[in-house]
Length: 303
Figure (spheres, rainbow, N blue to C red):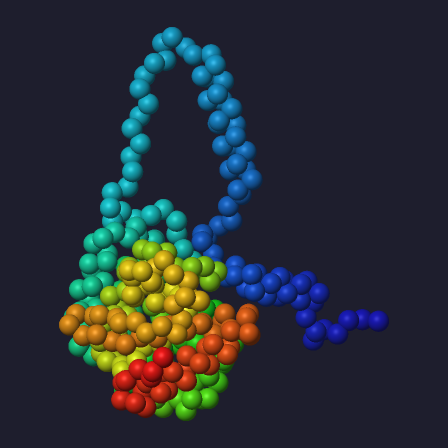
């Protein structure tokens, strides 16, 4: 029986299934234009090591020249790997962080901050991300929620918390009478998705930190809810860096930016709640605490 000419070939179906599997495993970013044979590279390295060992065992009396000095790239020099966009990654330095601070502080409005962020090329994560994920929600809100970094769905849509964890967050907000379209504002510490959803590095956090701090200043929320331990550690520093989310959650914190102090309340990340449903009761308690705080005019409820 002849096959249906309109149906995709088995080879195409297998390729599509393989690509779906790669995406599910986080392999969604190419690092070079051509494939790289790492087996051949390993074999050459092994052969070179064996040759060097043989020369050490049979030293030549006339071959006593000093080894050439290794030349390391200077600060700010471009790194070698080329990413999918064809751009060359830059080695971040303290100057990059200072550049981020200057750019963030120059923003007078959220629109200016967003434009500056989209034009900023100091963070290598931008080279592999599809979109800059700035924020979502009502900028006039008194409630600001901050996560760690965009995931795959967020990178595609360019908005924070739109995947499964975002859907859970929306339900949690709705349960206390809040929503991103009305009276909540949502952002992340990191504005570009790390490849394969890996954890952002300390350098990447340091580069993005001035922008999220300025974003908080411009929103001027009555309450910040940290979704997970990472945003709390990135912005609070100090003892918070040494503590896990189980110790941080539910405890009031003060975030100082310039001469302004903001009240903050860490709780579990929605993605963690999807993996650990038993923790939802504690997160629900945190959201109720946030509701009471906002309805009491910024007064923490009694312990």
